[in-house]
Image (cartoon, rainbow, N blue to C red; front, side, top):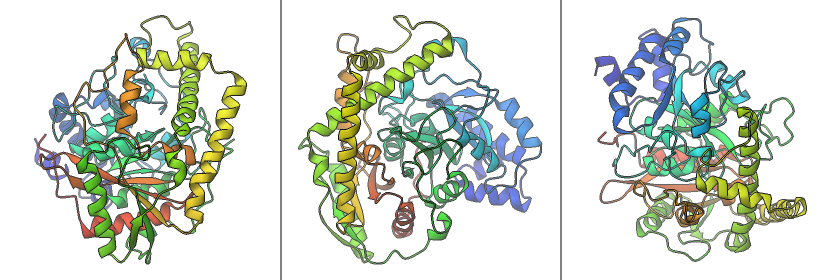
Length: 478
């Protein structure tokens, strides 16, 4: 590996941008260093599945916007993030076979470019982002840099593996049920799920969707700076979070005062939680108390409602059905057997049995759930602390498709992700932080959840924790 590729490998995006601003390196040199790392490291991980290195070099050599990340190389997730002139497959084999080229940027991708990023390719995603592991039939399994027998999580698993391995300092990610926070936990990264309506999903998706988008990163300051750069509504948006009172980067180093924090260290439905995940949350509670906060057992009672999973499944499966209809329109033909993986076809098939009235009732129930969950914060709590996942990173193949039991991966996923989907339904911001490692060296994240619109508070506390228990020195063997 060249000296520049090695010297910049573990710098975060803020430091890499500073090198460009100072003239110490050019954007092209920084990009070439990232490309060298991708070509050297990725064969062991399979994180970067679509590459447009020549086009990226042309971008880096030309004029770039004077944004906060001018000249920093990054990658887009292969899921819904259209980039004009480049292909997008959503992890699907039928789309991979034709490699359709996007005709326009999504609003968020355009903001990434305006921030000065040089986008070099796409990271692997499970087909349509439906599972918490990244092993699509189309592109194969992505492996965890901390232990390649294990999954980096999903659905932003390719992004997390690329950042954790030092290929790029920050990468685009999205979250419909935990898909930023899950791989952040599994790969030892920072993963902020923003408030619903904080960042536009235009022009192709609607902010009433369960999903949101931002990134996975190695530092709280990178996440804060990117949120500043890309936040805000787009044309036609109907769900719009109120703008912050000041830049999110201003929250770094700001004392949040003494906070009342609830601790949930067990499964809200009564299922098992791995001892290392529970320990991660408890240790973080102790750390937060040492920083002057009050931590006591407590969480929104609505999270224990057994009906929540059913409501979430109805919405998730309907979204899958809509997604497959759009793919068929994009292909210009009806989908046929083999076009879609069994787990996703089963969800779309279930959606066909849901009537319009059923779907409207599910939406109404979700509104009730959202209000019940958010009431807990209104009643005087500041943050909720949980493990991010119910287990440490699982082995490759844990969520493998089973044609004889196509919903088996989703059933297995429910045990793995008991703490994240609730806050897609409630719309609240939540962040996973890399504050624990198992005795055998696997990362375990902890999740903090704030009231709707309070990313500022999450960034303040996350920066506190990063300063008190730094993680930047932790690097995987790959």
